Amino acid sequence: MASRQLNLQRVLSLFCVLLMVETVSGARGSLTEAHIGPQFSASGVNQTPMDDVSIQCREVCSLNVSDRCDFVRTTPDCHSEGGYLNYLEGIFCIFPPHLLPLAITLYAFWLSYLFLILGVTAAKFFCPNLSAISTTLRLSHNVAGVTFLAFGNGAPDIFSALVAFSDPRTAGLAFGALFGAGVLVTTVVAGGIAILRPFTAASRPFLRDIIFYMVAVFLTFTALYLGRVTLAWALGYLGLYVFYVLTVVLCTWIYRWQRRRSLVYSMPGTPEMLSDSEEEPVSSNSYDYSEEYRPLLFYQETTAQLLAQALNPLDYRKWRNKPVSWRVLKVFKLPVEFLLLLTIPVVDPDKEDGNWKRPLNCLHLVISPLVLALTLQSGAYGVYEIGGLVPVWAVVVIVGTVVAAVTFFATSNSEPPRFHWLFAFLGFLTSALWINAAATEVVNILRSLGVVFRLSNTVLGLTLLAWGNSIGDAFSDFTLARQGYPRMAFSACFGGIILNILVGVGLGCLLQISRSHTDVKLEPDGLLVWVLAGALGLSLVCSLVSVPLQCFQLNKVYGFCLLLFYSSFLVVALLTEFGVIHLKSV
Image (tube, rainbow, N blue to C red; front, side, top):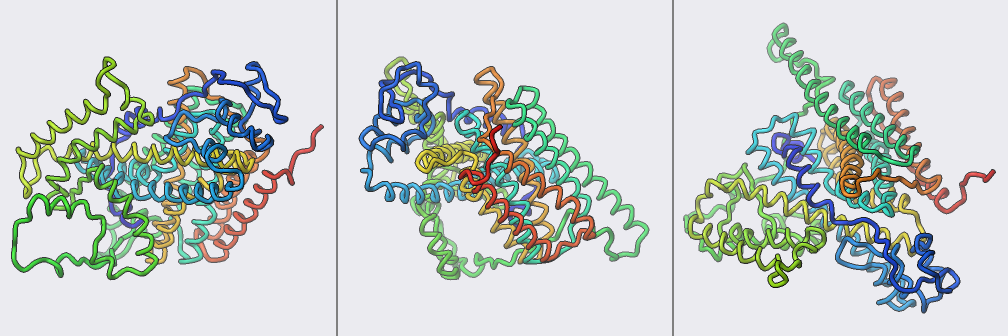
């Protein structure tokens, strides 16, 4: 988290991201309504095509074991147009019934690995390229920090919401994940920071962020009550986020103006206005080994050596100084990092050469466009044959090879070319599509687990999806608090979730409206979604009242109260899901 805060001056503009997301968010199409083969009722009796609309995939577990595979293959509600793997077919057709626990276990490991892919891609490839583009475009620190630093940090949450909103059957996942992450971050993460390092919160930034977030939650609650999101409503979400960005920029300008004015009338060296400062000095405790391991004699590395070094994701110097837990996690990351290094270029403006690796960057000119073609709409465009003869992916490889050859012979290993900054855009698009592809698989797995365990999409979103997308930021914030920067970590709790809910819901619904030309219909999963929205609203109101009453001094008691609130909420949500808590029918 500290590194993210240090890179406030380096992120991308909103226009580029809107164009990119609109291009890639079609990874999941609308629900197929075609009838495919005979259908089965819960009793195993064939249904007519007229009954297809009422048949839900959750009914599969009530069928005989011998009928489940045919039901999954022939029921439209069990089909997912996005993604590369059919998880329901794998459970009910590939694995025998007695190996169902093994299938669920493998899916759980694969889900964990997908979350790992999301985290590595966002942290090491997506955000650095956003930083490089921000530096190239010379964006101001404030605009970069509240827009695309936050977008880079919340990329897994936003892409998961975009994928979920693209299909009416999984919209509950989006609301569950966004609301669930909101409750988790504002209670568990914020409470953990207060427990680890009690501190005094910056009053004005805290009040500003929590009020904006409450407005965003109220908009979403109203949309759920109305049962639909119109074009004007979706644009209102995005407009509110633009207004939030402008408010942050204006507040920061006013704060700096007041501080400069106060310094004129104060003694030199006197600290002024520290209580409301939004900035904290951050220092790095990591040791730089580059000087220690620099060779005594200079030698020119060959092209093959440069390529091997660039594709090596393991730093042996760090390996020797890290604990066992870090090494175990690194072993799991190595295949992912190698694949991402091979397919995604990274531009680092902090380095003298901008991270220019001539052989690898030339290889990227072939591989990265190929990845774009094979991941856009789950490869539908890549396998399309032009004129019925040549597939698109082959044309991409041929053109990329020509461009790579020209670039290789026109550049040198020691000096980056003048157009090197363009690789940041290529890396940004490629990493975004990797994140989108992983998010699509996450949504499909969660939906499959919901079918097997008969869980609603909302409870899957508020638990597994919210936990998976938020656990990385939670540990980063806790580490930042332990290092002595609790105010910075606490501020990050609200800044990220504001963007996630406004852009996740607003942009997700806007893209769905642009494809279907109709309003997005919302079908809440019964009482649970109202429990979730109410819990989030109640936690925000409690913080809005209690924090000022404590004079913005957050101590361990406040932290434990937040943890108790989240535990109580989770118990109520699960009891509601399993029908223990329910509304009496009139």
